[in-house]
Length: 490
Picture 1 (cartoon, rainbow, N blue to C red):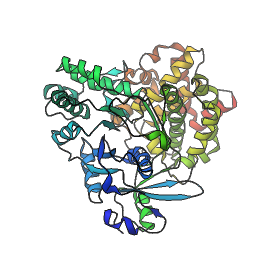
Picture 2: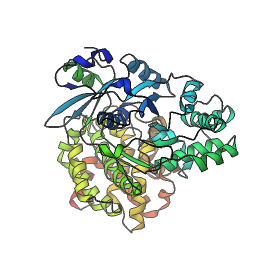
Picture 3: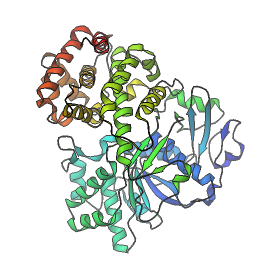
Picture 4: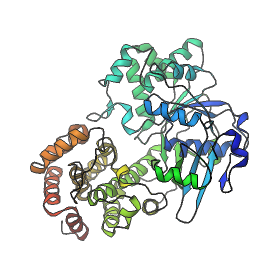
């Protein structure tokens, strides 16, 4: 059965339709970047809210600025912007059709349709999932960098921008000229202090060509911080077949774990949907939740990923079934990471760590080690390096996390420990592979990547420990070195 509005009333048994009339929805949100995570997270929360009978003026208008976004638009347009979300749990599987998206802006190189959509007074929130690496952050300073060619293009051609941030600026300029209140810009990416980072990208770009408008944006536009969490694998043949086996033809299905969490700063001057009714936490303590999640979950993903990748393990749950990798994760989390995570309201950090181990062990999700290894050059500076810095500030040598960095370096050599080629898995793969080769003889070359480590390589304890550990990984193999870490003889 092809998924579309006409077939919603006759879906197969076991596939749940939206519990509301989609014809009553009108858009209040433009969301840029409608990949799997967005459709398994924000769209699900809104779908739940619409089913309660209110907030029908907050449906999602999808949008994008890349070629991949245009492909997604084509897929979703062909099924009336519906998609299935299958929640995977070891004991049960449930599939529902999500109807919270009611349109998708045409993707155009000039972004004129996107600018027009965001200029509409009915749009009160513009949200984004443009990946961790999409915010033009200078890794050496941790602040917005104006040097990227796309930023330089938008500064020179602000009326025909090619980035999401340039389009947001153009729409805000149009709204100011028309006397329309500014929309709220809400980041839904897994970036530390994501609201501040998004504000810096928008105002930083704007200052390159219109300082007065940048000042107006800084004074009038809200950029709430948020923490988002749900394990959502990429869609492949398995996921496509899974929903077809249920009797539905969906060209853009999503699978995910049953767990989800969304914590948001309540800063929406032009209004927001009542998402607290469906489990979203609105709080001033977003930073605490964010630090917990980034250090324990995202840091934990890296601790699983690189030992698993070097062993040639395919699925994350298979890596968790490896007793050594599971013990490595548990020890680094317990002995190192938990000690530098500040208290979180109404949360037991030890229990949260146990939850993370359980979530990563879920075989039904079938998340891949390769996905967790992806984009280390952007993820390591956000998820691992800050923890090493905090541990060093407390006088710890951070052995487990430095060992993890050595394993990442070994992974980036491009060949696992079985001798199989590791296909490119980072936007900077060629450079990482080259540096990894140099670091095999001189480990200091790896820490010299200031775009990843900043000045951390200048710390003599870190430099000596990394040198020792990387040489040991090459000489003995990762399993032997991890074993010595676990038994305390390293």
